[in-house]
Length: 547
Image (cartoon, rainbow, N blue to C red; front, side):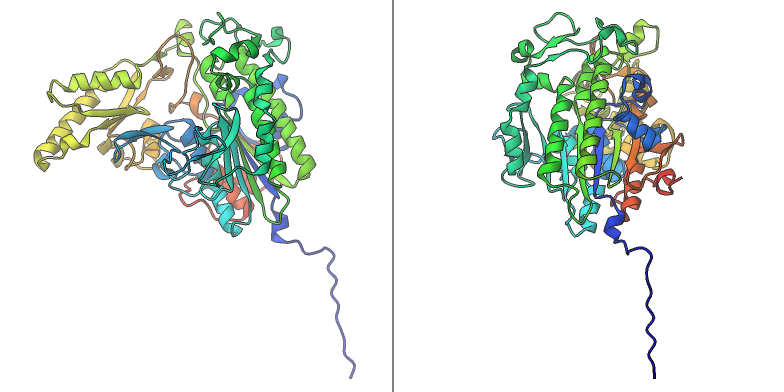
């Protein structure tokens, strides 16, 4: 009896699941970037930086933050968890801790020590972050075989995106000019970091002169270089080009001066490339993840404002950093083998005094310390001898709850009276838009619209204050005629870029409304892993469906 053997030839080889995924994801966050900058400065950009992401990738033009406060810590946490402060717990860059009765930083962890500089700001970890991140989920899905590295000038810009399971996070130490880390990750810096620090790249930049990239007369997208609304540095009379860093560094805290210039971005970009090589990212069987947070645009933006020549030059130079990083990824990982997304942790308002001088409604509210003193003095009339307000942080009022811990009936009434008095007092002040007591916030739903909805999504019941308030458009809690800030629920602070580029991403754009919390679940679908534990966002179907 003859046996018939059937041979089946496959026309294409089997492809592993790992090969379907990018070898490396690079998550870029620009600290304080408006969506509008991509349009306003587009003619000054080259073809291989921002324009490459815009023209060859997928761009959301109507992406927003959906909570307040729009600050750095909450922004980075929300991008990578796909949730908001109500869930991930990072309610500000810092806040009043009710249990310890002290101000705490969003990445502060006194159980840790600095690594790389004995006196550096290294007592940090992601332990205050209550949700997993997309980077954590990548580690979990690969049985920790994927490598996750976070780099930034700011510690929170490195630590929060990298998540709880990161192999390392590195940030810039302003005392030594080195990149350092924390004992949360390891007890000594890797050799490649020690070698990078030994190059003293930061010192090289401090001997440079910051001049405009193009002839200054071409900066027609910005206001005059000599502006009364910009802050200057010690040692010079006016904030005008050129800036001789070699002369200014000694009277301006040396490395602190450096990160307030575009050279801070240059430094971080070079360190990110060193991390790419030093950690062999994208070379293994599993997808790796590098997070890069450019902090200098925020530092420059606060001082100079969004209409300054300095901020335009910063973004022209950042465009070159993006171009070089993409070229490095092409070379080391290979085109279409990696995925990049770029976004921002918040945007920024025009300098309020410049708005006022141009007859646009705006103003400067009193700062948090002054408001705390003012409220305590006011409440003394009803509660003599008692200091009821412990702190004012992130437009929230924190009562001293110990003063209401006596008889439940009388203390409950006293708390109601104190709350009502404070709400009415705040609402009567010029520049205040709306005020909400904790009880009112609790009645709100996560899906609520308007300012109240923004507050609800940014309000964590255990960590947030007893009263929350928001200022009118154009108003900031910032004294003086110069400089600006962010943090509001208005579009000038919420509308930020969201760009996806690379493997698995079709070319296109969308003007549909999306929230920043949609980034993480989109990555989850592209990577075929589960969503972060606190995720409330929805995948960007225009990207994941390839349409």
